Amino acid sequence: MKKGLLFIAILLVSTVASAQIDTTRVSRLSRDSILIGDQIELIMDLQTQEGDALLFAVPHELSGGVEIIEGLRVDTVSAKKGKLDIQAHMTLTSFDSGSYVLPPLLALIQNSRGEVDSLIFRGPELYVNTIPIDTATYEIKDIKGQIRYPVTFKELLPWLLLALLLAALIWLLVRFIKARRNNTTLFGKPVQKDPAHIVALRNLEKIRRQKLWQNNKQKQFYTAVTDTLRYYISERFGIMTMERPSGEMLEDLKKQDVAAGDFESISNLFARADLVKFAKYEPTAEENEDTIPAAVQFVNSTYVSQLEDDGGDE
View 1 (cartoon, helix red, strand yellow):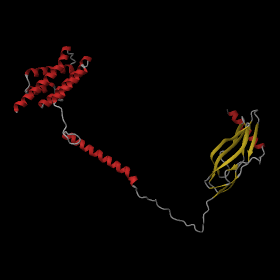
View 2 (cartoon, one colour):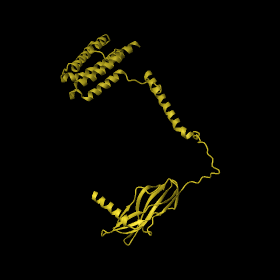
View 3 (cartoon, rainbow, N blue to C red):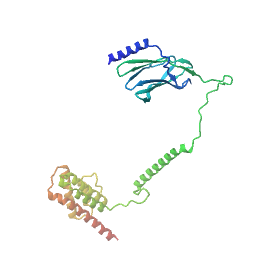
View 4 (cartoon, rainbow, N blue to C red):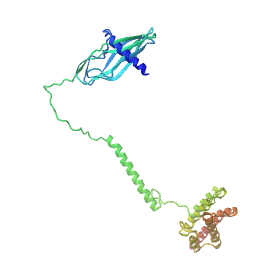
């Protein structure tokens, strides 16, 4: 690769040194003059045969204040009977006024037999003009301050909508907190709470369908059953049941109007649950099967007794 590059460099240098500028080959500009900072196209027209290789030697910078904005682009203008009309062009600019003679550019054409021809395009003259200033009427003025335009409704609309949305969210949050505190819905209606025995029986039925102990989830089974009973006892008898040992809770329950048989059944259930949860006790299948019916019997029995007491009071 390095040898190939060295060969091309030697070929270009020797060709430029030996070639004479062909005045019939002149690059042209898209217009003859520009204002400072404007862009202009430098164009080269040539003709090649199909299959020829074309190489341009283009410098990175042009002489004296002329800069290359966009590098060389080569386009095929037309193709007729194996001959190609080629147009190469690049974009230039200048930021200094004056007249500039652009340097010659070299093009190498290699035909299918490997023969190389060189073409040198003589550079045209570029005129860069400044913007004329009328010194007779020219007056130096101070820098103007920033122009402030009045705020339109269209600009304020997004902020108004955002403020309304924020206000609505704050209102909903206040209503939600108030509803939770007063045990009502978001719009002030009292929350219809299911009776404790309905909630307990529904949960016990759900636990039964889960078949936890049948799948060797004894601890989870007894925890679910006892938590349901604790909720019911708390709602039915007003006893603090959560976060308390089973013994303390049962002592308070014993003081309530609970039939001896129901109290004994529920005491045995809590005792067995404590053994399963804390002593890794393995209950028998008969004990597991009796757990849900015992809990349901306790809920139904104590609920019926409550109805009887309420009826007697009337």
